[in-house]
Each structure stands twice: as structure tokens, then as C-alpha cells.
Image 1: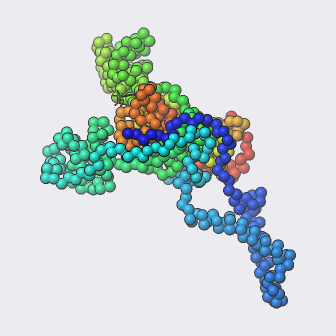
Image 2: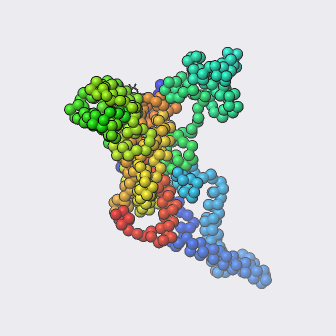
Image 3: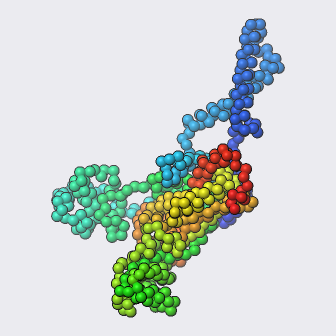
Length: 585
Ligand code: ADP
């Protein structure tokens, strides 16, 4: 039984907070004592401190020489003492307290940001405001009152956790037969009828064969029956990847806690910071533009003329009805949407696009394509099917066809980030972000000849969510295609940021989504399994969440880069007062 959700996916009733949102409280610093540049304030207090110390010591010596009591003070002594305490407190505040704090407290986990080029100076750290509560709670978002405390649900026992030991004589015989090659390793599951035992025996045989220990790779704790015939063959254990949570991510009026499986430090913290900036600015809007999985077989004819005949036949709108009836026999959910052909001499590449409900849909579309190819053999008996996938699909490879036509879910996501949020949360400015985006994500990527890579690190977020939610991680290639746009709006005060992602390939049924851990992460997002009301709604929602999380990631990393690099160079070259509207034109 599932624990009732509290409010992670409930609509936030009002996107616009009814009260003005107080940003993080700005605790004054000693260095704010005078409205002067920091180095002048410091110089002033240093001079004052040492002057009064010198003065007071001289007065002390004089009093000893003239045998005057120490408590007899003149007006100038009082002024000197006051100046001494004032400058001492200032200097202690400036150096001492920060120093003590740095010794006592560990750095906030909300520091981060490593881009792909970690080995050079690009690993930037930025300290986030200390968030005392999750950012959603810091706001008055008029959330509905909390429901009465939910009963504590005993964790569901997913499978038998008994550790397996391979000690029996029968096991020992089996291990030896795998080692000497008389029993194929792949046959252990069917031979034993016990997937976990099969994994344990295979693992032991592997260790003996290679002479290498697998002691760090866990065996217990995975339901081996659940991966059989669907997720992984010849298992010997599983790799652990930590799952962190970014959020709440406010998108389309709902809050989501986004699970991210990663071993890249700072990634979750950085995305979390982006979520905070989005939340404080009223949330993001994510729109699904298209939803269709593709498969493109390659067929060959004796002449280019015959290949062209088939192209014309397939693209003729009059034939679409017949072809879709044949295609749609494959599944209740697969519905043919269109066919697009590309010809290369005698070879024809036929790109079928179909809706796939809540499944990512590769199996579904492949079955439909096979139906159509079988059907076509009647009218085109000279058609030679070279392969059900001819790479014009295009799966798990960067390809312009996906970038332009889309594959899976095409999503655009936007947010307007308030200027004060950019300053206080992201520690940068609108104009720095706009300029960096233009020079890095657009111009820099163009210089690199990028294909769909007009972003800072979309694949970081895509892959982490894919791993957590049981998607096919190899599809991060085309799923990470993304163009990030930034523009100054509201007279240059605020930032409009968008990510456009034409080929997010996700599902909430099938593949790794049904495994216990991955399914728990989908459940957290409120998109577990098949949508009962509207088939396809869960996977479409997941795609909009992926795009919004990418938006958060882009915002945070770009800000770190802008704060660490551009602002410094702006100050150096004295360009900080430049006109924002010019920067965006
Ligand atoms: P994929 O095509 O992503 O590899 P599969 O075809 O292996 O996924 O898994 C999808 C399976 O789930 C199909 O058998 C399909 O009939 C079933 N299914 C149940 N409900 C749904 C739904 N709402 N959307 C899509 N498939 C569903």
C-alpha cells in the first residue's frame, strides 16, 4: 500500500504569493558600518585602532611617570577609549567572527557546481544563503492546510531479504561446472528457478575464474526476479548510486521533490538552488509540444525508382488510414501519428512516429513497424528489410533529425526570475547572465559545432533523473538536447529564462520503471505507473518535470559561472554599468 502523499504534487492554489515574500534576512556585517568601499573602511578602522592603542599606551606611561591614578580620565581619554572599543569590535567582526564561524561550521551543503570541465578552474563554488527551511516553506504560497497526520505505514516488504550463501555441495558442484565451462553461466536462472541463487553462484564462479574479489559489489538487497527478462542478464550484484532530492520545484502550479541519482558532488545542491530561485520568482511553466516515439527501418530495392515508389506510397495521406490500422494492432496504446521518409539511392529510411501512452515506447513502436513492414511485403515483394532500425530514428546517438523533428516528448519550459532573487540567491546579475548565455551557450556552442548542445549542463540533470526513475540512461544523448535562452525583461530588472528540449524520452511503465527503487522515485513525483484517467498523462508530466529541473540546473550553474568569472572581469574592465538593453539586443 502506498503512503498517502501530503502535498508534493498538490496544486499550489496561488502562484502569486499574497504577501510580499521576504527574501533571506540580510544580517548586517561589520564591513557595512560605513557607506564606503570595503578597503577604505578597513583602512580607516585599522588606522584608528593602532592610533588609539598608541595614544592610550602613551597616556598610561605618562600617568605612571606623574603618579596619576589610572581611573582619572580626561575627555580625550574617553574619546580614545570609545574609539578603541569601536575599532576593536569592527575588526573582530570583520576577521574574528568569520574566522571562528569558518572553524566551527562545515560549509553549507548548498555549495556546488561542477561543470563538465572539472579539472580546470571551472569548478566554481558559490555559497548559498543558508536555507533554514525548504524553500517552499519559506513562502506564503497559500498551500492547503496539512491533512491530519498520516498513519505510519510499515515499509512494504518487497522481496525476501534472506542473504544467500553458496555453501551446499550442490552449489559447489554448480560453481565448478560454470568455472570449467560445462554449465553456461546464462542458464543458471532457468536451471535453478531461483534468480538470487543463480546470481550468487555466477558471482562466485566469476571470482574464481578471474581471481578478483567482488566484495564491494552488493548481492543482497535486490529483487533478482524483477529484473529477469526485462532489465539485466547474468547479474552478479548491483551498483549503488546515491539519490538526492532537489526542490521543491514549482512548475505549472505544483510542487515536486525531484529525485536525482548521481555521484557528482554539488549537482543536487546546485539544482536545488535553481529550484529555490524559481520558487521565489513564482514558479516555472512547462509546456508539452509533441509526444511521439520514432523507429525508422532501412529497406532496400533493386532500383532507386522502386524506393521512390514506396516513399510516395507511404507519404500519401490517402494511405495513412490503412497503414495506421495495421500499425495500431501492436498495442492498445501505440497510435501511429505520421511517417517521414528519407531516401539514399536504392535505400529508403522510413521514420514512423507514434504515441505510446505512459511507456517510453521503443518496444511498442518497433512492434507496430514490424506489422507495417509485413503488410508492405504484399505490394512491394522486392523490398528487402535491412534492419528494423536504420539509424534515422535516431536512438541513443546525437542526430539532427531528433533536434529538428523531436523524438519522445518535446517540451518548452520558462520562468521569469526576479532581479532581487538573482542578486540574493544566485549572487549575480541579469546582465551577467544574459551575456554569459549569449557567449557560452549560443556562440560558444556554435563555435564548437554543437548538435543540440546549446546549454550549460542539461545532461547532468537529465541523466540523474533518468537513473533515479528507471529511464534508459543511454537515451540521455538525445534527451539532453536543449537550447537555453536568456533575456532581460521588465526594463532589464528581471530575467526570462527558457529551455527548449525536443526529444525527452521518458516512460512511467516498462523497462526499469517497475523496479522497487525506481518506482519509489516515480511515486515521489506522483507519476508512478500508468495513468488511470488519461493514458500517457504520467509520462508527459514526467517530461515537463525533467525540463523544469533542467531549467533550475541551467540557472544555477550559469549563475555560478557568471558570479565567478564574468562579474570579476566586468569589475576589472569597469563594464558593470553597461546598458542591459544593449546587452540583449
Ligand atoms: P517500452 O515500449 O517503453 O519498451 P513496453 O512496451 O515494454 O515499454 O511496456 C509497456 C507495456 O505496458 C505494454 O505491454 C503496455 O501494454 C503496458 N501498458 C499498460 N498501461 C500502459 C499505459 N498507460 N501506457 C503505455 N503502456 C501501458
